[in-house]
Structures are given as structure tokens and as C-alpha cells.
Length: 295
View (cartoon, rainbow, N blue to C red):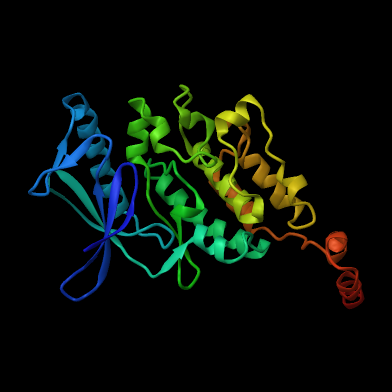
């Protein structure tokens, strides 16, 4: 067994069963609160954190139970969960592939519109299934969208522990600036579907080539984020750009309230951006050739 990834509240390991089948095993391990004994048991370092640890443990176990009951191609499959070493583990499918973040890095930082629409429509289909089980993700970002070798996306790293952290004043340690919505900064506003919608919008914005957004708290004070309709004009359809802007509204009430509606808009037919629209950005000879072929 070897380590795959490490986060604020968990560690993920690669393991093989007796038939050499690969699995990812996720361990509840809030590093700021715990250590490990010589026998491998997880121990709480400060007695004042014991109740918080136990609450997170309970919620992690419940998250595993919920995910184990979800069978959706765009949600990581949890096949088992158990208690050991004074903590909880969940056994998840392991698939060859790479994260969307890595895919964008290797692909020049932006994704064609047709592929972007299809990929995020699939992500939303999986996320909607999770929301129906009253579980939020709370950390949607390209690093948590895993692409199998066939291109199919899978959502990873759900956020029960993050919700607990927010409630006990550890919010800033459990969010990803640029992808976390303003209400995740423990400002008293409720979390909901709209919170994950902000993360979707930020992920689509990045997949268009916009880079990571400023922290949501900075946007609330002074919003300097270039609107998608300006930054990507002529590269993506106006319909898609408007949708991304709506998802990224700092005010929760201004974001779409329905994942189904967003998915419908992503799957709807749209007008391809014409070569003429981007002619000013292309070499003249290439723009002229595209105009000639379009006649």
C-alpha cells in the first residue's frame, strides 16, 4: 500500500486485493488534530479537539455510507467502509486516468466548447445524484474531477468533513480559494446546491483558460474578475459565457438554483463561434481561408 494523495482531513492510499485488483482507500485523518501511535492508531493530540474529531469521524462514516449506496458513472464508487486504527476508512474504485487539472495543464490550459459542455453535463449528472442524498461536495475544482482513460469524468473527495470544519470555525483550512463560494467562509449564510454551483462555474471558467479566480471574499469586497463574456468573447458561445457568469455570481441568490437547468443549457444546441468572429485574433491568411471555405 502506498500514498496517493493527502488533504487537510484525509489521506488516500493505493491498495491491491488478493487478486491484484487496485483500490483507493481513504482514511479520515484531520492532520491539525491528530497524530499516530507506534501501533498505527490515530490519536487526538489535544483533548479540546476530541469532540470535533468524533463529530468529523461520525460524518465521514455517514458520507461513506451514502456514497456506497450511489451507483452513478460520474461519482466515485465506494465499495466498502470500516473502522480500524481508531478512525474510519472507505474503499473506493481506482481508475487509470488523470485529473481535469492535469488534463488542462497538458492541453494548453483551455478546452473546446463541445468537450467542455459534455464533460460538465456529465459531472452535473453525478453531482445531482449526490445532492438527492442530501450530501454536498463543497470542493468542486478541476483537481477533484477525475478523467478516466475513456474521458468519462468522476467526482472525487466529497465534503462532509469540510461542512463540520465550517461549523466549528475551521472553515479557512478546508476550502480552496478561487473555487469556494463566499458563504463557505463561515459568514453565517446557509450552504446548499448553490454553493456547489459556484465551484462548477469557477471550474468551467478555468477550463476556458481564465486561470484561478480570486478568493470569493475579495470579490465580495471589490470584484475585479473579468466577466466571461468579455474575457472569452469570440472563443465560446454567448449562451455558455452567460451561464458561467450566472454560476459565478458572488450573491448566492443570483446563481441558478437548479443543477438540472444548468445541465439542460449545457446540452442544448448552440451556435458555433464562426471564424469571422475570431478573425481579428487569427493570422489574416488563415482567417481568409476559413471565410473562403465557409461559403
